[in-house]
Length: 406
Image (cartoon, rainbow, N blue to C red; front, side):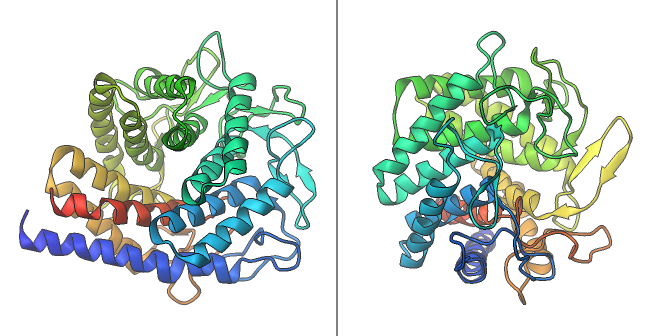
């Protein structure tokens, strides 16, 4: 590798490390602490105003716990440890349903159950967060809770007839009619998004708890992606399925494509299976290259396109940009092609110039097609968390020496 590229990699590493330490983490530890009711505030709007009485989402809180746990594991910063402990204690005390098992979708601002459905996507994030907290500090209670949630997902959600996992249940664990994560989703029994985050959660749990059955379940999830979810023709992810794995949408999500391209590889790498890793590597390269159909000349990744209607969403959301950097870095490590690394650097340049809010902290929700920041959607909230961008920074920090020495 030439000196100029090495210098560019160092700038990417230094820039993302600085953003994590000086921008992302302080925003959440200083502006989002709820000193009145515990944990973290539920929402800050795009103009930087805290919304009093906002509900608190399970996904937001699980992702906060994951982020501060992972940051403490890498940085050994006592502030990160305190924030992780705060988040862990609030989560366990407020979100867990001790009567029926699992965790609530939403609670009120003062910690009472509000929406008690058991969305499997959310259960997976609690596993992911608690496993990372155990990894960071060795808390056995958190490991026990993570394992309990894993076993609950397998007991309640796993489809023993056709494979895969069903989407959502009532508090009492009856399958719901409305299974959607959000109103824009297709109401189907199985989705790629949920399977991706079960995969992610099981990978994190398997790293710190080498259970044979968990290993088999993780291997099965990798195979589901390789055999059922990745389209063998387009190499994009198919996103929505009925219970028999018949695809129900042609929608292409570039962000999910690029995110899955490295998460699937990480899952396969965690397993001791050379053949599976080789197959996953090939599939992940094709998947990432399909995602790059949405990569723009300015270094950004657009949101999604619908081949049925011809509509393309040109908004640059925060999370696909974060995932694009990691996916491109992973592509570089898999192929040795410096062009991918150059694209990752270009993407970070786009983020630095456009998405980072240097005045109020964190990243904007998105950049509008006209290039202006989107101030209508939240700076922090049910979906806007420090996990995608924080994780991207940590991933590049972790991969820096490998990329420099490639």
